[in-house]
Picture 1 (cartoon, rainbow, N blue to C red):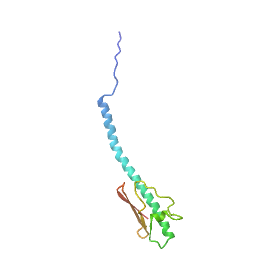
Picture 2 (cartoon, rainbow, N blue to C red; picture 1 turned 180 degrees about the horizontal axis):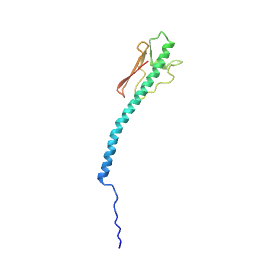
Picture 3 (cartoon, one colour; picture 1 turned 90 degrees about the vertical axis):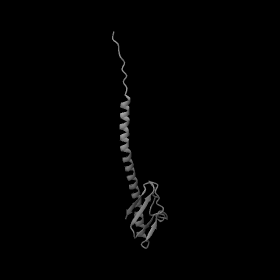
Picture 4 (cartoon, rainbow, N blue to C red; picture 1 turned 45 degrees about the vertical axis):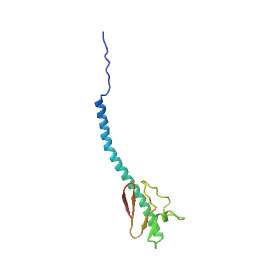
Length: 122
């Protein structure tokens, strides 16, 4: 008589632990890289917003040659604002306190989320 033996085909505890360790190592490599790319993207978005503000300020200085400085609120208000839309913050930064001077040609902003100052020269 032929008897059939039933084999249990399952993963051992060691094999499962090895897989978990490998997944943990991959995650420990990927998460810091993702955070670095995310921070870099935020910084680039802020620089783009600052460039838009600088371009609006340059237009303001062309239209008002006697002006030496302009604030963000002056660029966004009036019958024909120099910034058609309000800049949307990407990293909890605020643009309302920015004042642009025609003599310094530098625009800077400190972002509390990124923890650094981002400067745009125009």
